[in-house]
Amino acid sequence: MQVINPYIECMRAEDHLLFREGATVYLENTLISYILWRDGKFQKENTQTKKTDVIVERIITYVTNDMVFIPVNVIDIHWYLAVINGKKREIQVLDSIGSFRRDDVTYILQGIQRQIEITIKEIKDLDFIKWPDLNILSWPVIEIFKKQMQEDSVSCGLFMLNYMEYWTGEKLTDDITQPHPISITLKKLKEILDVSKPMDKDCFNMAVRMIACEEIT
Image (spheres, rainbow, N blue to C red):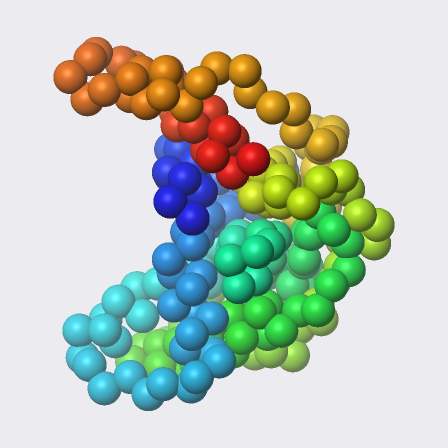
């Protein structure tokens, strides 16, 4: 999780990854994914006004984008991607091991639905949304990959990040295969990221991505 979020932040900084085949995309991070999972599973009531403001802001961000990409973690042993696709009115699941139990997606969707209901109470007029409706629990869950793509037991995080980077809502724009190991050492990469050294954004992004690949695998 510690390296996945920096990678996601790098993707957020790339404009072309936020607009895909005419659709706008929001890339969520792992912390918020966990909060949504927790809220959906344990149904904790929100009693904080400040937290309500954060919830409303989050949901407005979601519903004003065509797609929301959410990293899903299965009890610290497996990663996959869930996509709220408002253009197709469906929840798309991209998992490198193929079809699997989706309890975690259900909990996340329940968490989002609860936050949608909070937002509706705060903002009566939501005519500006891009989604066809706000009852996402009624949207079908579609398994994009039926067969296993992952050949080992450790690269699911890399597959998930590749899905976040290349999924358009219809297809992958790159051929996703089993990731190859990176030969450069983690120590050397961390030296590259020394804050005292000058570095342009592209080099920084590449270094973070390489560290993510090294640590995830």
